[in-house]
Length: 58
Image (cartoon, rainbow, N blue to C red):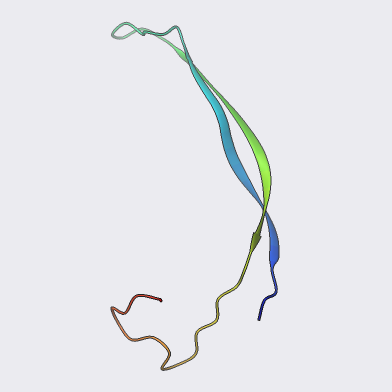
């Protein structure tokens, strides 16, 4: 089964702190830039008996 599912995922592209450096007990501003990126997810199917407790997938 090679079907893929498109999903929009948020991605942080930039972050700034103003003022930088910040003094103790001072107020400051954090600015974050976020964009949505489309990713293709591939579902993984397991059936009873395929994996055992503690086993890692190959």
